[in-house]
Amino acid sequence: MLTIPQICELFERGGHQMYSGEPVSQLEHALQSATLAEQAGAAPELVCAALLHDLGHLLNPQGETPSARGVDDTHQYFAIPYLRGLFSPAVLEPIRLHVDAKRYLCATDAGYWNRLSEDSKRSLELQGGVFSAADAAQFIARPYAADAVSLRLWDDQAKVKGMATPGLQYFFKLMSACALAAA
Image (cartoon, rainbow, N blue to C red):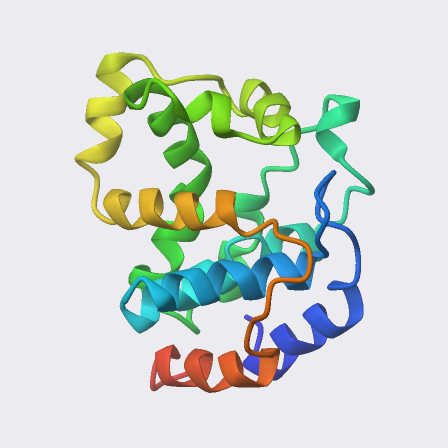
């Protein structure tokens, strides 16, 4: 299990890496996602999930734009064992489900696919493609699926070069507030 200082260290050490074909770094993407969640009035746990949703990229680096090489890095699952015990399912489940939320949105929103970045379109195919109607219905009925959909929409918007956000220290306090008492 990671500690919150270790999470911050991961961002400080690897957060400068560019975010797969986008004009922002890993850290900028995380801060933008969390800022958008907070601005939308999301619960603290969901803001924390937005901050940490791509931590798997830093824990399991696959180089620049793995999807261009046909690699699905399964980042949505990779971070969960490192965060379990530190955060509740209200943080962990939206992280775990945010890739399936993309598959769901492609199935249920006719214009969503067109709004995806090129890398997101490419990775969608590696991640299983668009959900069928039955799979979409099954997905959205799951606990935390609606939160994962919200997180996914902030994720899609969090690719703006130069967007002003609070720094990592600001969100350190949020992560500390969301951490389980036993951690």
